[in-house]
Image (cartoon, rainbow over all chains, first blue to last red; front, side, top):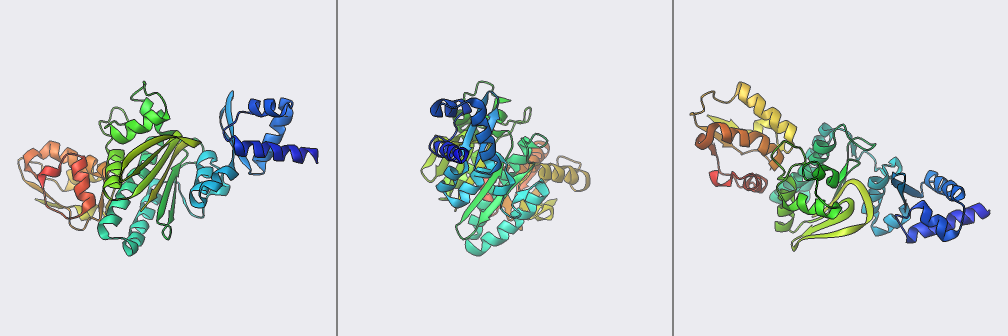
Length: 254
Length: 91
C-alpha cells in the first residue's frame, strides 16, 4: 500500500519534472536509492514512464505528460522517446525503405482526393525526403527498432515520421565536429548545404523541405535530441524541446 | 535521344533508387557518345525530390554538359527540385 503511494508520488513528480535523474528523485523524497530504482523499474514495466541515456546520465520521463500535448503527436512522441511498441499504431512501422516507398504511393493516392495536384506532389516530395533521410543516415545503426514510423491522419491533415536512429546532432557531428548542441545541429541541417554522409557532397534535402513548407503554407515541427524546429510561412524557429527525442520526429500539417 | 523519366517510376524520391536508375540508364539507355543530345521528359512523373534527382540528373549533367536538355514541366515538385540542385535554368 505504502509502495503504491510512493509510486504515485514519483509519477506525479515526473509529470511535473519530465527528464529527471534518479538522484533528483532520491533527494526530493529523501529515500534510499535502491527503493527509488525499484519504483522506477516497476513504473517502467507498467508502461507509465520511460528512460533515455546511459549511466551515469539516465533521464526519466512520464508518458502521460507527452500525451497531454496532442493525442496523435503525443503517442508518436512516446514511441520516438522510448521505442516502446505499445505506442505504435497498427501497420505504421516501415522496417525497410521498400515498405516506406509503397506507403508513399498510397499517401499520394489519398492526398490527391483532398488537395490540389501540386500540393499533393510537394507533400509527398518532402515526406519522401524526410523519410528517406532516416534510412540514409541510420541503416545498420538504429538504436533499437529498425525503420521508420509513418503515420497519417488524413482527416486531421497531419503526417508523422519518426525513427529510433542516431539523431541529427550525431549525423552532423561526423562532418562538422564543432557543432555545439542539438539546436545548432538543426539550424545547420535546415539552412546549410552539408551532408552527414561524408565524403558525399550533398545535403540539399532539408533545405528543400524548408523552402517547400515556407512557400506553400504547410507546417513542420521537427524534433531531434533536445531541440525542436518549427517551420511555417513565417520561416524557421528553433527552440529547446520539452522532450528528448533520441532520433528524429517530424510532424507535417497541411 | 529522349529519356522518359516516368519509366523509372511515378514517385522518385530516394537516393538508392536514383543511383540504380542512373546505373541502369548508363548500361542500357544512354548514348555512349557524350556529344549526343539527351532530353529528359518529366511528363508522367508525379513526384521528384532532390535526393533522387541528385543521383540521376547531376551525373548526367556532368557527363553530357550542355547537351543535356530538361524539357519544360508544370509539376511543382519537379520545378522546386531542379531549383534545389541547381539545374533550373536548363528548362
